[in-house]
Image (cartoon, rainbow over all chains, first blue to last red):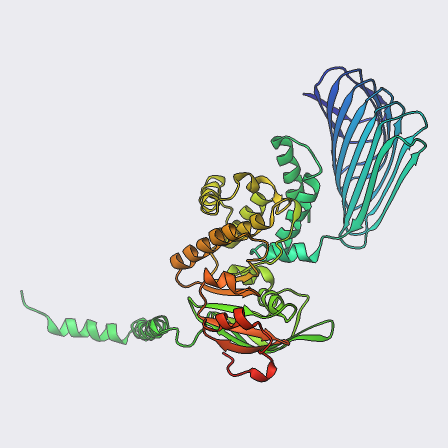
Length: 239
Length: 301
């Protein structure tokens, strides 16, 4: 396990050259580059709580490399640009991001499938509160000649209060040999779900907390210790 | 030793004249009467207090009346079946009892153990002991069955149940219901078969121990073997929880072979049009509901 705290906007570079875990905490503006070398599987957990920042993350994946990204943010005010370069043949990324926010959040993602057999699975979940403004711009790009690729992007935003939420899912595909999916949802938790939970004696507040925890955690692949950390953050900070 | 009676009487007289002695006596009298009244209230038989009493209930949704002048009384330990064709308001009635805010009660009252529950939120009704086993238990992705059940038990008991006690309680219920143990770790009802969902509802009954159970079309989505298991578990529950009453909402008489009702009510056109004993079930099985129209109201409990 490698623990890294990013507290300045100078370029930080992580080279994933063995199957190790990276735990990255963001506390201020940042500029991060992550490279995964050939035939390596990497796991990265990125988290931030109550921070304001602008940041960029560039991911470079080489031949037959795999990267699992799990990302959690709580009440950040942020502008983040993430570029994923799937340069190597059969390179693969699974990106899961869950966030809770009462402020302005802008996320711009670009996923470039630059080789054959590349796969991207992008899953974003966000709870927007009060007067939050949440925008996801996600572009998946596949140029002609890069065959047998899989592109999947799925974004859900659940709103409480007067939230301004936008999702712009784009897939620019210039190749017929591709498997592509996308889904976007902006909405609220269903009254039926809340009724069902409350009909078992659970208060409205606890019912909503259960749904929020479920929504956030079901999108993250975390070990029990980190899962507990996320639950504690939600329980202790969410009002 | 010479007894000084004069001194004894003098002190006794002084004592009786003291203000606090007389206050003490008055207070004692008050507590004596208070205890007497409380004892009488406790020892009095429940008399006509019913488990559930629905009085002249009129319900609308989007300005349209969907239940009209419903009257129903259910005593302790009684089993009532509510039957009728599709779309007549059987499930609506169950959701109104549970407190679904989509339905507006425009007239009448619902009493549970003698207290009006109309103003109580859904969770408070549940905590009083009402349980609605739903026709289509909802799938909630991300909320684990275990987390859900633990939160429910903790809310009912007003304290967080320990993991060991929870697992012990669950294991016994899961074994009784022949459920797959893995289901407890999965998202609530997500990917469960119809039978597994219904078994999960009955597991919740066993864990939450309600005193009024409403089974809304428990038989839908259940194969015969699962239906037998589920009904056996409900029978076992009501045999060990003697005060528990049961409302069975169904179209089909089959489930009533396993859960024997004391009374059968037929709903048609927003109203209870017939109340009878269990003998009516054979007639329904043979002839259907067609003859039970509004004109045939002969008894409303």
